[in-house]
Length: 125
Image (cartoon, rainbow, N blue to C red; front, side):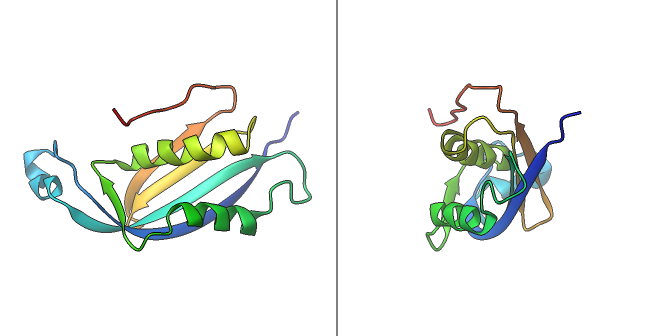
């Protein structure tokens, strides 16, 4: 039986986004508002001895979001996951990837990217 192994890293960043099509019951989300976005990234590794060193991996991902406040515009948690996956997958190919992004550690999304799916996800039109 094949056993899958993952490392995981977490980090957080302040960000501002909005949800223009928010339902009326939460219409306040239509306007720019602030969250602390929490990230958890799980990356498949192929062996037990630091295949990917997780401190270095975390630093690499944190550098992607090095601005003081992220301007995420109309991006949902799922879209943020997709954008991050588009960065990670070419650099760490042929590995399963799981990304979780939450707003304030309270509500969010988890996206699973199996390595056998090779399509690039694009939400910028």
